[in-house]
Length: 174
Image 1 (spheres, rainbow, N blue to C red):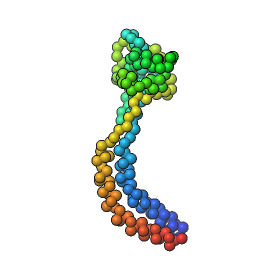
Image 2: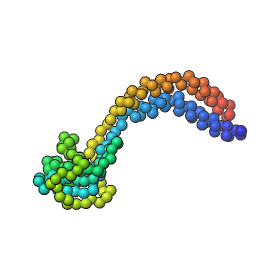
Image 3: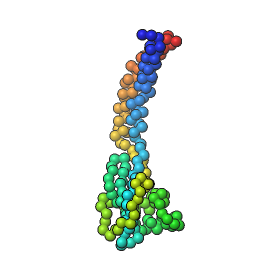
Image 4: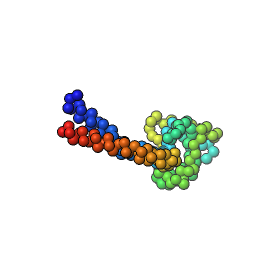
């Protein structure tokens, strides 16, 4: 084995062992504990209510776990709140910028309720509406932390002598 390939091999071994000693099991588990999640709605068609001033938007609803076709029901009072805020036309960004209390009035249904007529087809991929942004704590990851800490602690006595040996070998190669 030539000197360069031995040096490269020892460097790779050193880096691999450093990854193990760094608490990689705990770090990997801890990175999954808190994750942001977003519910988004991708519009296809706009419907106007024949009963009041509300609208329904047909489209695809998606979050971290689900994806389904549905209808976003926007009541008249949500539209009025958005109109008061903008003083003119209302965009999806205007709806998303409303307070959480007002956005709670938005409903996603799998079927279009009666009393709506089609008025517009949205161009595909034009925009999306972020309905909800939350941060979720994953309890299973929290429960796994003691075990990952134990794995990292148990493997430490094996890793340290190996790291010292490889480090000594790298020093001799130079």
